[in-house]
Length: 342
Ligand code: COA
Picture 1: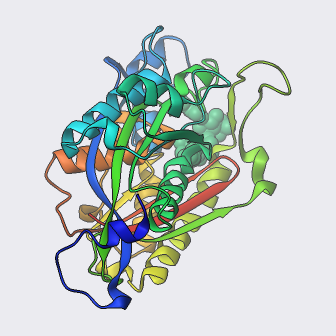
Picture 2 (picture 1 turned 30 degrees about the vertical axis):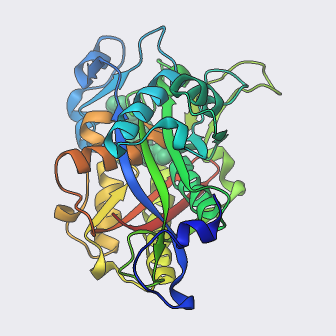
C-alpha cells in the first residue's frame, strides 16, 4: 500500500502539511520458554552466589529454551501473540523484521521462517543484527519503510536463544543472559506531524566499531565455522552503557521536539538494574517511570525491549497516548533510542 493511501485513510479533514504517516503500535505480544532457572542453580557448577548476581545485576531468574526449541519457535509464538493482540490476520502484513544475533541457521533468515509459519505470504521478511540494540535498529528500519510508503503493516520481532552462545564456565557472562521473544505490530496511520501524534516520533541510531573487543562472540561462519561463545569485559561495557544510553535517549527526545520531563515511561534494554538506574538518574526520571523486567528475564539481547513493552502493556502500565523512550546498547558497539507515543 502506498503512503498516500495510508495518509488518506482518516476521515478527519486535514491540510496538506498534516498528511504525514506515523508508524503506530497496534499490537504487542511475547513468549518465554517454560524452563525457568533461578540464580541458585549456577552455584552447583560455579563460584558464584544468588546474592552476587542479584546485587551486581538485578537478575533473579531467566528462561532457557528447551533443547529442541529454536529462535524461530520463540519468534513465531511472540508473533502469534502480537497478531492476536492486534486482532489482525497475518495475510495483512506487508513485512516482517526479526532482530536476532542467534538465528536458527546461517540462512534462511528467521524472518522468512516466521513468515511461512504464520502464513504471512504477502510479507517480505528479513533479519537485522545489531545485538542488544537490534530491536531499536529494527524498529527504526520498520519506521523508515512505513513513512516512505514501502509497507503499511510490519511485524517487528526481537527473538534470541543466547543460552546457545554461553560459556558455562565463565561466571562473568553465563549468569547474565536468558532466552525469549517479543513482537510489535506497526501500522502506518495519518498524523499531524506534532508531538501529540501516536506512533514513532523519532529515532537515534549510533555505532562505534572500535569497541569490538568489549563484547563479541569468538566464532562465526567465515572464521571458525562454529557459533562461538560470548566474551565480555563487563565493567568496560557498563561504563559505556550509562553514558551512551542517556545521550541517545536525550538525542531521540530532542529530535522529536520533546524533553525527558515529557516522558511517561522509559523502556530500557534489560541488561543490568544498575545500568537502568544510572540511565534514569542521568535523565532525571524516577524509577517509578521505568519498566523493569531484568529480574525475571535476565538479558535477552534483542528480545528484551519488546518483552518489556509486552509485559508493561499486559500489566496495564503502558496506556494509549503515553510517551515512551526506549534505549539499548550492545556488541559492536551499537546503540540507539526511539521516542514513541503508545
Ligand atoms: N559471581 C561472583 N563473582 C563474579 C561473578 C559471578 N557471577 N562474575 C564476576 N565476578 C567477580 C569478578 O571475577 C571480579 O572478581 P575480582 O575482583 O576478584 O577480579 C569481581 O566479581 C568484580 O568484577 P567486575 O566485572 O568488576 O564486576 P562489576 O561490578 O562490573 O559487575 C557485571 C559485573 C558483568 C554484572 C557488570 O559489569 C555489568 O553488568 N556490565 C555490563 C554488562 C552488560 O550489560 N552487557 C550487555 C550489554 S548489552
